[in-house]
Length: 77
Image 1 (tube, one colour):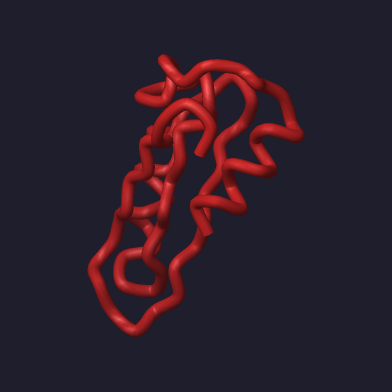
Image 2: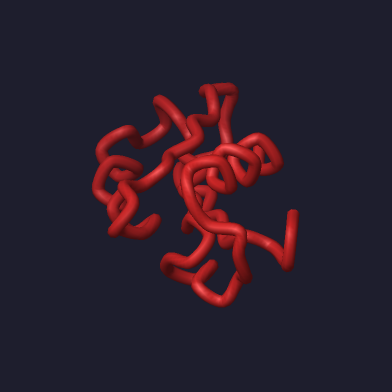
């Protein structure tokens, strides 16, 4: 990843359930997904990412924008 590592929070009980990549809106952060993770319980594990420039990933350098976010999310997967 260019310039460092993204903050990724894995939420939910480890199980055979699928892992879902949870991407917040452009002006938000990963905490948006905490209630969803609680509601899903053991049905899925969420990998909630703080996008570059947001939340705990706020110190990562440019590039920013949708192209950079796509590249970052592919790297997370």
